[in-house]
Amino acid sequence: MANVAPEPVDPAERPLSAGHLIVAQLEREGVRRVYGVPGESFLDVLDGLHDSQISTVVTRHEGGAGFMALAEGRLTGLPGVAMVTRGPGAANAFISVHTAYQDATPMLLFVGLIPVADRGREAFQEFDLTGWFGSTAKKVVTLDDPTAAARVVAESVHVARSGRPGPVVIGIPEDVLTLPAGSSGGVRPLAVPRPRAAEAELKELVRRFERARRPLVVVGGEEWTAESGQELMRWAARHSIPVLADFRAYDAVPHDLGHDIENGPERGLEQGLEQDLVGTGAYVGSLGFGRGDHAARLLDEADLTVFLGAPRGDVLSDGYTRGLDSESVLVLPGDAQGHCGRIDQFVSAHAPSFVLDLVTMSASPDTDVEWFGAAREAHVRFTTPAPTPEPAPTASKGSGDSGHSGDSAYVDLTAVMSVLREELTPDAVITYGAGNHALWPARYLPHRAPASLVAPRNGAMGMGIPAAVAASLAFPGREVVSVAGDGCFLMNGQELATAVGHGAVFVALVVDNGCYATIREHQEGAYPGRPSGTRLTNPDFAAWARSYGAYGETVTSDRDFRKAFRRARASGLPAVLHLLQDPAVRAPATMTV
Image (cartoon, rainbow, N blue to C red; front, side):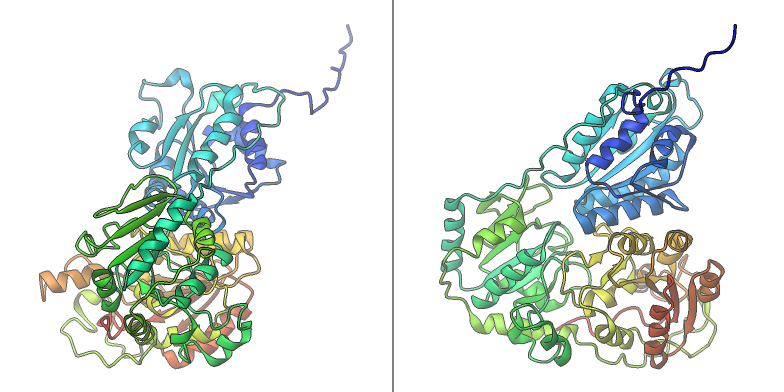
């Protein structure tokens, strides 16, 4: 009997596999990219991505994939998506889940798992998904029913974005992914609650402001917009209320209003940030590591502190020691998780939306104008770069645990920041990881647009370069600059290959001082003269970058930096500027005001 060709099946009626349904639902949720290292445990999802509108960004390490997903969530408000394989892949991605959890950033991590029938037999790369991630994710779920694939994705996106945002981990067994899941293209995305304050709550807060002489606002969290940030800063400036930012939430509000839509975009840029800054806004700096002493004093001296999207946590309060007993109002979309100390009024509300309601309320606070003005002046002094003095000779300079020879050609990072303040576009995205190198951009680079900072609030190293890749892909029209220490850079510097392969463009400044400077600084305080375990042996970072097809250049003097930066920016490639820094200089010249 002759072979008879089967009747063609309409693709719209062909049952989708669970793996393909996951992709279809991610499309419905608005996901534009997934980041990952491929694994045989989720081949069917990869096959679904083949014809998808979603871009698959192939990374070189699961830690890089996770950090890129986290950065996407931080910048866009929609959970970034990473996909990794079982056991080792999941272990490598764990750092990004911990970061997303402590940073309160929406993220989805899909983890390929062993077949269902192999569970509990110590199969190849088997591990306990909930046991690993249960303490550092908002939710951990395993897809055992193929027909539930779309629902699980929709619910995971909802959980990641709702209340206090955070990561959701989704286990996807490789055999379940290939099973039929129905012909549906997915389910309707779930609405994300954005609670608004009641009028009575707003009126109560206005009364508190009117009673206070030294009210203070602290901003943080996610999803701040240009409108909410500008409206808050205009309102606060009008009433002489200083505004501080939580640690690494510096982009929640514009740092000055001298160039906003009220005054025109040219005014602040032409005159420079230093000119007439006191009168252009209410921003007075940040709290946490690297903060100025004036910011800590404000937290101590305020008679009313209003936390908008930022609980009073460990880092913000200098280890649970500052501002705990002042009259306090907390505005968060969920509960008071992470907050310590006094709460006199709690408002369950989305902080950026709350601001837009607050500024419409009439208020006549009798604030201490001199206190406010002094805070603004102290902030300007603290954030205005000054030349770094020559460091005193140290026994370790040029030898020992520093990792450097006796070469005296070094770059002054403070001078570099002065150049960047003049060169960067107003909406430039800044990224960095953890280490002393981050003290300079955190202190000296102003933020004038929302979604312009990606840095780990939990202090994870290795985030800066993956974040720069994601930022460039998410905002291809915006300038992206990453500041990286030599230790931080090489933890995920291989993602430069991902940037080259996917067309991401940014300039990375690699600060080379030959040591893990933060730990070395702690050692010198606790064990002076006994450096141990902090020396680094570094490559030629510029040549290394060129080997990837990126732009690379070494800068040995801050006098050469401006032209080097312009060359890097004009290259149209991901670029690395290798900056040699004196290992004896580990922080800006003056950390107190």
